[in-house]
Length: 506
Image (cartoon, rainbow, N blue to C red; front, side, top):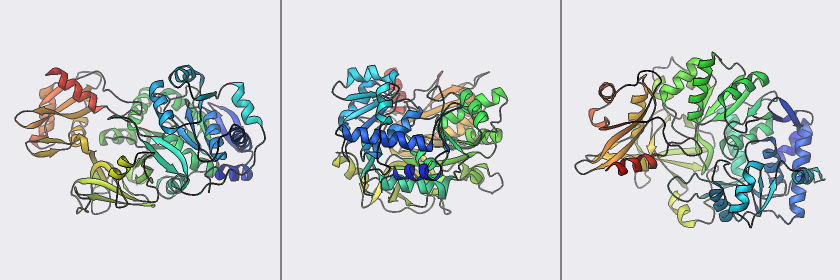
């Protein structure tokens, strides 16, 4: 079944329900959203776009994003959403690799992409041409698609090389959405999904379950994440849910506390996409209350590996609540997970190894990259490249990416454990730990610290703090105090850059 069928059904069941909001203004109900997507799908077909073709979206968050996305599916094509924060040359590489027939853009991105990808037809979603394409008549039902047909071509962040295209099928999107309802959160007609994180990634993937249930879709006028704007819109709308990277949760907490705002209009904040440190989520729950749910997924198994429920994130009674809060929860309904050794054999509870995932939400492979597919999919298991441990109750705790593990004197040191310890110090706002090559030890631990406002701690103070909380051999040997950490467009810390900084010092 084509995933766009959900929009057709919702338009028939709730035609007058608000669908698209720009700030506080409703710009389309579900009947209008379906009509525009249907018209766009017919227009794409008239331009020669056939089922299975790839059509890209290089746009900031805006209501037209969902029109474009569902219009592409209406035609039976596959969407290639590209992060709007990428450089035009990076976006051009993705369009070329995907073989995109055309690309929808917003005005701020059109010029740079036109120069970088002159052979790709661009359609500005804010211009009259796009509105005309959406205004035509189209069939109510989308083009038929099989469960295994490509629906979304997701490109990895590519922090260590060229990004790879993850093939996400219609079936994967359906299972992800149904797992949301089973394992993550409820969605009701009166709710609204607020898109502060890029719609090209997790936030956009969660649009589907909100369409299924007839919730509204709220785009901030800024087109991105502004903590004050999010707080104001949540009050105006009420019952708002949103996906956030951990860095966004940190910034929202800081802004809300500074303003004395408990955010009563926010119902749910789903966080994932990077390490959420226990100190940060404890502070967020203490301020906002039980609004937080954690998910763990990868593009290769989108948003669908584990979940830590609202009750578990807010729990302060269970004897092991701190350990569970530091975890990413338990397996979602449609997958099974394992922690394996170097050969992929299951390890006993508590032992650290590579996290493996199996189930229908796992990708069939990378786009036109059989070598990478063979390396990542082994005997039906997705080798995530993440290092972690499962406890006896099924809670999965992430340690690090396999490439980030520090081996010092023959002993593995997991940077996240050191980072968690440092973040428990009130003088530390952010921290990232990496290894630096050392002739004697192989590697030594180096910590990059962003001090909290006020009197910053010195290295001796933090060293003493570490001695009180973790084994001596895990303590950083090198300290660097910085104003900010380098991050990619998704808010993830670029540890490759930190390692380069250390190399340049020698």
